[in-house]
Length: 213
Ligand SMILES: [Zn+2]
Image (cartoon, rainbow, N blue to C red; front, side):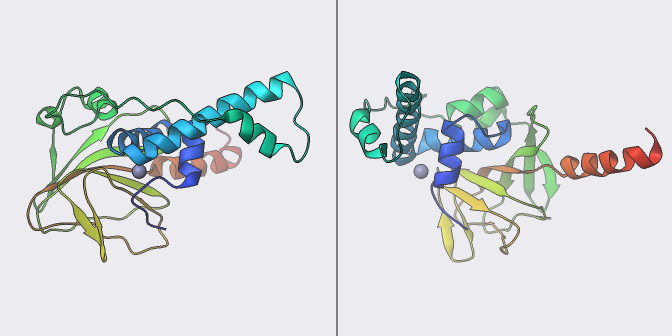
């Protein structure tokens, strides 16, 4: 499935604090750049918080969801994210990089593309900033499982769908997926994938009883 915004599933998991660090960073980056999803997140968080309070006060009877909704009312307006006017990387990402795009330590991937790996402690995702040269596809793009890509600068198209600054693409390995930068500028994006290490550690765990380690 491909979208430009957060799926309900991602939004609710993030609001509940159930996402691994890498996925959370992709969500936080999109939310920083997307007023619509900031509002949706505020509603989800307010609903979650008030639901917990309600549950603590009195057990919720079956069918009383409408009553809970009535009690929730309207959430407070969401304050805009404060960031320097010229910043390309939103705050959550600047904290990982140590500054804005000019501080990114790019490593060449070949064919004009480059990346910078960002360290997370979750052991389940691989997080990197990618620079795709104008008019070119992402090189050597193979991955298993889910991939979240958030556009930070420039734009790419994937098939017939265009993704511009702030847009998030939520892709899995069931779809053919070749992001290609538009002709006018290099595209910088945040890409979060499932870590291949997870598979290796699974193999090791499976082999442990056999190898006696
Ligand atoms: Zn959005």
